[in-house]
Image 1 (cartoon, one colour):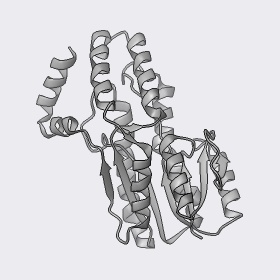
Image 2 (spheres, rainbow, N blue to C red; image 1 turned 60 degrees about the vertical axis):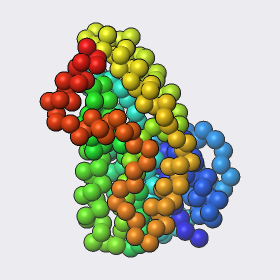
Image 3 (cartoon, rainbow, N blue to C red; image 1 turned 180 degrees about the vertical axis):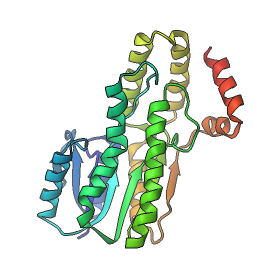
Image 4 (cartoon, rainbow, N blue to C red; image 1 turned 90 degrees about the vertical axis):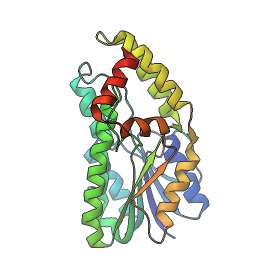
Length: 263
């Protein structure tokens, strides 16, 4: 039986992925700070991926039961909407600690179980390859950095026979949508610099996130990347056409359009 590790197992995409893999007959370990739903046959380990000692403890538990992971699927992530000028240093550091350092930390510590033929699947965002928008900048920057890390990791681990793939989802119907709504509501109330702009931007965000897909769709993409004979590096799903169109334009025109809309 093949062994799979899934981070963010308590979230919508992670939970859906765990359920699908268990249905397919895999032995699945799920890591998260909390377990939202009980999943039959899931080996859940309560783990904070921002804590190196916690990740090391999780590794010891998994290594005590298997000497190989056939895939590591990264579904853990933090979404935030904030001003790059007004957000606190701790908020700035924290999102990097989850979205980038958490992935690095898991891969580094669990590397002894990742062997020739294993696969690493990293969940990024449709925003990663695009020019950042105002107030989504911190999230986009972490995902862009994550993809640079993922490509570099792909180049290195390819030499060891390990495949690395990236999933770039657009809006997905998970708790992150409500989290983003609360974050933007909070930002609109707290910001001292962008009061009018933030309210207009909220309308845009709401319209983009309304066109979401179920978490099960991402689970199926992860399964496809895990089982494909020749997995692609990037799997894009539910990309927003307006964001893609905006990104085609020269930078100065993008800036002018956003200023016109929000100001």
